[in-house]
Image (cartoon, rainbow, N blue to C red):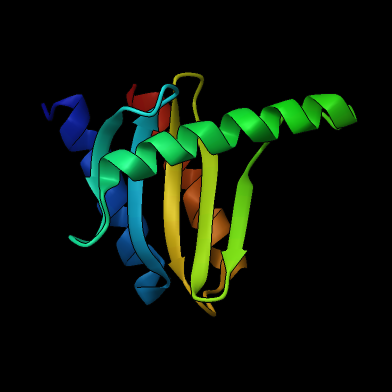
Length: 123
């Protein structure tokens, strides 16, 4: 039986392969930003990405609460050279995904939600 980290790593690999070249990196992190598993390029610091993802979700949850629009389902940053998406993966963790500019966001969102659900179940 594979360890939890191996299971999560496998889920990240599946996400990357099913989304093709659109996903340039993915990381699963705990709610406090500690990296559980990573599939990021070598020029990206996964620990910093984990910390940023946890902070981003915390801020978006506060904004959603202030606006009384319900629970945050995902947060997406669109920049001039790509996108960054963070979504809950169960109650205890997050999935952060780096996307290339021009990525098929609809397809990646579907694949990322499935991966986040699988990560939540693995934990």
